[in-house]
Image 1 (cartoon, one colour):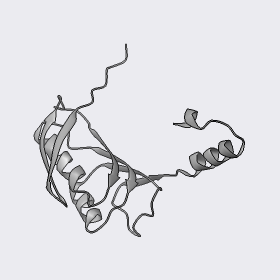
Image 2: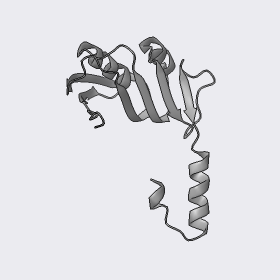
Image 3: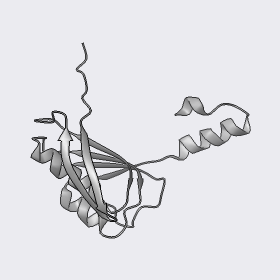
Image 4: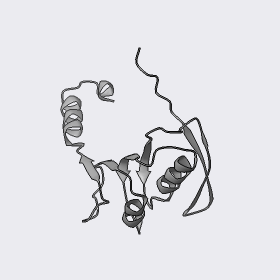
Length: 130
């Protein structure tokens, strides 16, 4: 039987704009390689705090970050470099900085977008693409 994947959650609060606190991790991450998913990373505070919370909960140091929309404003690149994710996966939904964070792999949305346009033009459903 395949091993069952766990999906721990993190509790975060925003006491004021631009400030994020990760209060705790729900789920067992001890000794696990964690993948942090976020739909939009702007200043990178949430994901860097999430990594620290996971480490404090016993997760392996090597972690992957996956981001749909890497806005990466301000000093986000510096924060991500300092956090030392072993892999950062991002899409090209928004332009990346000239020098992206270390260990970044860009996944192109071009084939998906082209297929969406093709299906719409042909009057076909796009729901199966998601």
